[in-house]
Image 1 (cartoon, rainbow, N blue to C red):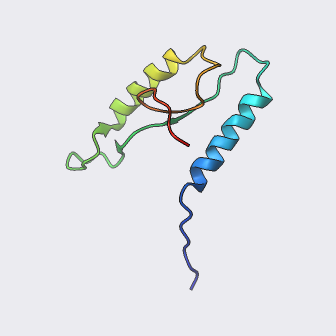
Image 2: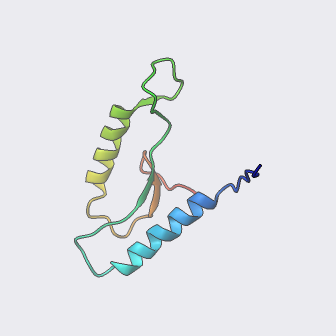
Length: 89
């Protein structure tokens, strides 16, 4: 039987590095804007008794508004929360 190993933080580190690579690769193309967003805790199973505070529809609307707000922001932080705050790395 194989062993499962949990490496905490690796996924976030990879996502952050991939985002920064894309930002640097396309920095001269003003039609493209890259950033990562932690979407928050979402009830992805659709059950009302799930303790997560956001339905998938609520989360989608929050992200839509955030993307609209950040559409032209190429100077701000690249890793943020769904509340438009820096997501600590």
